[in-house]
Amino acid sequence: MPSTVANAEPGRIGIFADLVRRIGGRLSGLNPALPQSGRLLEIRRAFKLVIESSPGWTTAYVALIVIQAALPLATLYAFRLVIDQVSAVIKAGTKAADAGKLWWYIGLAAGLNLAVLLFRALANVVTEAQSQQVTDHLQDVLHAKSVEVDLEYYENDRYQDSLHRAQQEAAFRPARIVQSTAQIVQNFLSLVAVSVFLLVTLPWMLCAALLLAACPGVLSRVKLARAQFEWQRRRTATERKVEYYHWMLTGPNCAKEVRLFDLGGLFKSRCKELKTELRRERLSMAVRRSSYEFLSQSSATVAVFGSFAFIAYQAAQGLISLGGLVMLFQAFQRGLGFLGDFLTGFAGLYENNLFLTSLYHFLDLKEKVEDSPSPRNFPEAIRDGIRFEQVSFRYAGMEPRVLERVSFEIKAGEMVALVGPNGAGKSTLIKLLCRLYDPSEGRITIDGIDLREFPKDSLRRNISVMFQDFAHYYLPAGENIWLGSPEQGANREAIEAAAKDADIHERVQRLSAGYDTVLGNLFEGGEELSMGEWQRIALARAFLRKAPIVILDEPSSALDVEAEYEVFRKFKQITRNRTSIVISHRLSTVRMADRILVLDQNRIVESGTHDQLCQAGGIYARMFELQAESYR
Image (cartoon, rainbow, N blue to C red; front, side, top):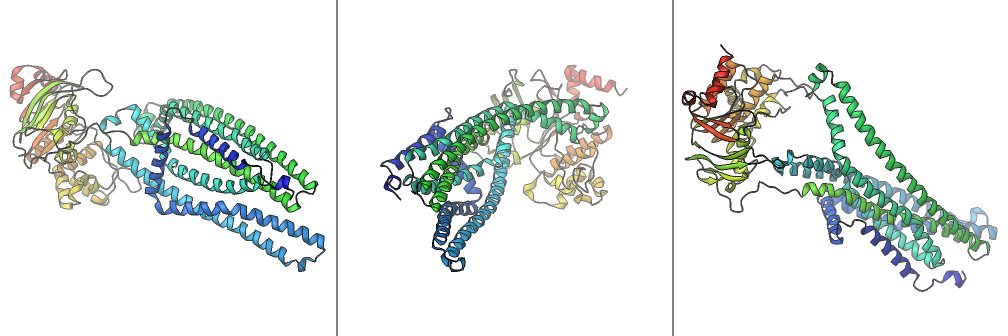
């Protein structure tokens, strides 16, 4: 080959590498909000997540990438050998049967192409296995974080948006980052091999055209990725509204009212309107993406065929053999593909890392209810009792306080009832006692020790609670009750004893499989209970845990009067020598309590026994008289 073509001009490789570095630097700087060290840290964090979840598959994938990087150049060279050998056979007039070297070259080219297909298939299997394992691992991470975060987050719309975005991105983004990086490495190695060959064969301006032809598509993809990310952040709440309407239309919780009040048409139209709006905006972004892709691919096509014209002219002048013509054109075409994939990999890395900020934001949520650095052991037996000392509390984002300087004492072994109008702060007191929140001011103590000095897990294991909005677990009846104290093991005798205390044992025995019957109709073979029966299951769950503090929040709202009386009678027997708190609006039963605390206007306004409060003629007496009047 003539020296004018064969010899590379000095500095070509350095110029080419510098252009690549500049493009990479441009891509990495497109997020001005995040410093370079922060971007690298996030990428390393994504790698750590993937490697932790699938170390074996990740290693296999990287090995396959390296192998696949070397194969394209080998197949390219083998193809040149075939073409040149065909030309030699034609010129020499040798019969095909005597052209053994030709068949050997063809076999080599075929073998290399089969190897490409084999390793590509293996890579697909490894990628699928790795992606599934990463998805499962990150689902576990999300579950762990969801349980770890404070209750306050669940009552915050911004948290719900963050969780929604995290769930959308966590399933595939980290694996994509690793795969994008691996593809970058593979394409870089292949690109280096092809580039060195082209730089010593073709003028450097032709190689620069190859680089410039790939840039528009990469930069447009980065720009669109940023726009997609910002759009998703703006529209998260709208997407959750669509899911909410879907849940109301298809789920069992609202099924009765949707039919009774004919709400189906209303909810469907609202859901359709929101989906139409989202679909229109997604289509607009798709049109922009397609337009950019058309323009970028057009520039690449012009570069390819412009280079082909130059190479064809060289072949026509006899400066390049026929095999060299085919090889150079394919090398240029593949080089453009490698470069495009290489730079697109950078853009993909930027895009995936950008979207992963939603996952990182969720995983980086900090606990507000924290354990003490020097925790104290929970008392083996409560001796003095529970004290609320000037406790005030305000929910995040709400200006008025729910509780205002509340002070009272519950003696060890005492049964206290909390009564008062809705919104007076009764359930909030219970949440504070369980350390689901910490007071804004003041403190709560057990035997003189601030709750914040106990480990949260230890404190909560010593409190048994049934909340007003208790959970319906669509699990076997026995397991439903066992969940009240899973640390004790599935003791059937203890489970049945708790069911008897809640007066639900006989009903469970009448189920098709007794305590092994799945409750609810969500799954096949399940049997539904009435609301009152569900409430008794929740009561049994609370009774199973032999905690020194027992709390019932509206435990009889779904029970009739006679059943309610029986529940409270048994409850007083069960909680003998234990400290217990009951919240109820039915004053006919709370009179069994040793003492009654009346909350109004976010404060304790009255305290005493039923008889004492009735004689005082205050708020409790008026409430009791109003309820009693309805029975006369």
